[in-house]
Image (cartoon, rainbow, N blue to C red):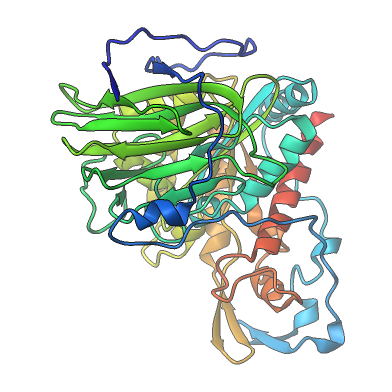
Length: 474
């Protein structure tokens, strides 16, 4: 095992097309070159976990093909009560999703023009990165995964993008990437009641940490899926801190490397692992000499095409940004260097009975101020409003969240003040009451909690967002 000090020679990124630079100076990465990496080998996740004391089910990517929505049979759908008004289910908003009109991006002409420029760059064979922040809709990587697949089919596959190498909580997943981890990692995020509360949450508002040398986490290219089968560099984001441990890094069967995470004060560290373009597995593990805290890994390739990052944490609101240590969050986002940033929050805000419009407006503007402190004015952003939400009161009797529309109204009004467009998720699925209709659809497009969607429903939402996005190219 070779120890690489933080004073290692740094290699600047190259090959990126000319475009506006982030306003925040990025942290230069320590660069490890692993030319001997020749593929993941035959060790399975189950075998790797068997070496640790506790086993955990593997997080496997789900494959989804072409989304086909079959219109429901109106005669087979029940009548339901919405706000004590009896409605035929077939007449609910969004009951025929295949007939819904385009829900366009809304915004000032100059913002829409910047989004159009991003789409034209992708169509022109250049490198385009879309970075999505959000809560559980984004964390599950269903709708973002569909967006990634479509854009990579259209423009080229530049890698999976951002993902955590060890799941911070049960159910964490990524589409078109294989993940495996031992049980001992501690996941931390802003709203975790048993979290550290120190704000050291990197660029995505979440971290995983361990000091046990038996722990490991890996990210690996997929074997059979059309996307995600190749990578040429891994960008590792970690915490440098007093008393930090040594991070062990292994690609495939190549010899382990190690990087110290000791630093005089908390700071963001970047470690770039360069490999021959192809299938690879990156394994990260603590050495046991102190805590190693990891903020994520970005899987990337050179050339033209698309990268789509999903930086989501379940249960969070946009205001969680205000609890993250700001310099690390800014430096991490600047290192990703996105061409378009999407903030998909609002569903959890709408669920908060203490929600107050003026306070929400102030918090949202503070979040966007932080975003704009990183992005140059030419980089557009999109606020995606909350999805529709319902609750089943009794058999065939439902209620619909009124606050959803109010949260969306604030986002619609605030977005243009910060160089952002707005996309109304609730309207895109049919409006208030559509979550009930999507649940009653056969097959269901919404989950039984009337908050989330089924994989098919998420894919349909993604297709509707993509339609709005790609409509900007003309």
